Length: 186
Image (cartoon, rainbow, N blue to C red; front, side, top):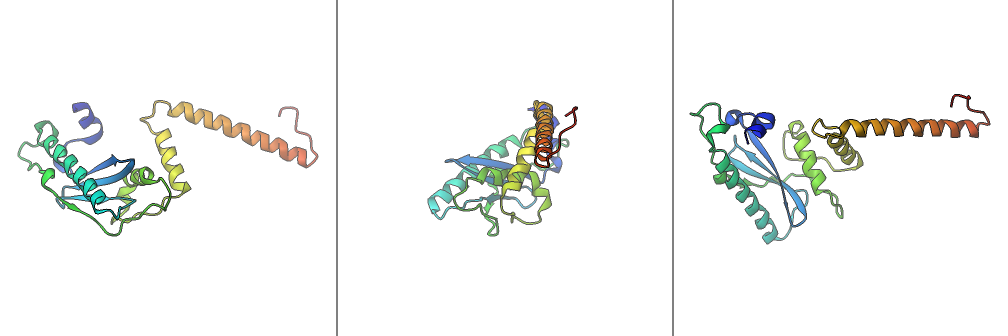
């Protein structure tokens, strides 16, 4: 726990928000524990018209918040012992009405959550742009090239080699179409 706190989190004294992706019933949605506003923000790219399904998702959020609340009581998370520790398990759920939705028939809920976690610092409200191929590709590139991926350099080297081979192949095809011979070195 100390390693995770020191490496990724820091101390909780200046904590403003906690981002929590949640997965149930083959669907990802997102909870923001807003310490400043004392709320649990429910963000969902595929809101359900079924009141029971929505209630289940909110219930899962509050269950996770109770767990986090217990964790935040640990003295090892705080620089200053006098800092008021939030009881996030008692925060009220907040459901913004202006969140973007995924396109019908897609399975973009996980991509939507990833985009939120990666780019939340860019938005002033809870709206989100549509998911498209560029969004998916940028998330994949970010995950593959991340410093946390031990194979990032191997993947990058293979991608460059593949690109070089494809460029050479296209060059040779273009030369043949124009009736030219490639130089002996190619």
